[in-house]
Structures are given as structure tokens and as C-alpha cells.
Amino acid sequence: MEELMEILTEIAPDVDFETEDRLIDGQVLDSFSIISLVSEISDNFGIEIGPRYLVPENFNSAKAMWEMIQKIQAEE
Image (cartoon, rainbow, N blue to C red):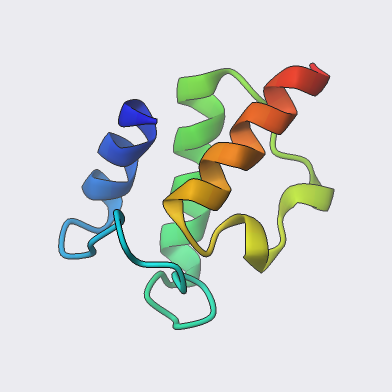
């Protein structure tokens, strides 16, 4: 989770990822941030985030992203 928090902080340093749970729904992250985030997560965790995981609920919070990463790692 620490590595994910570092990635998130690099992409959007002004966001409190510990508490924010509407990153997509609240338009805290824009489309460019999401593209960067997916790329960074894929590279850093050695996973492929397929289309079925590219849904807002998987990116609304750091916790949701972490759960998605763990789920993908378990499948691979």
C-alpha cells in the first residue's frame, strides 16, 4: 500500500489519499491523471489492468485501488 500511496502522491500531491473516497466521482483526478495512474500501477506492480477493472469504483479511493491490485495479482 505504501508504494501505491507514493505513486498517488506523485500524480496529485495536493490530494489527501488517506481520506478521499471520491477521486473519480468528485472529479478530483482528471483523465490524464487516470491514464498516468494506470500506467504507473501496471509498471510498479507488474500487473495488467484489463478493461473490466477500468471502472470508477476501482479508482475512487486508494483503498479501492489497493483491493483491485491485490485481486489482479491473485488472478495472475
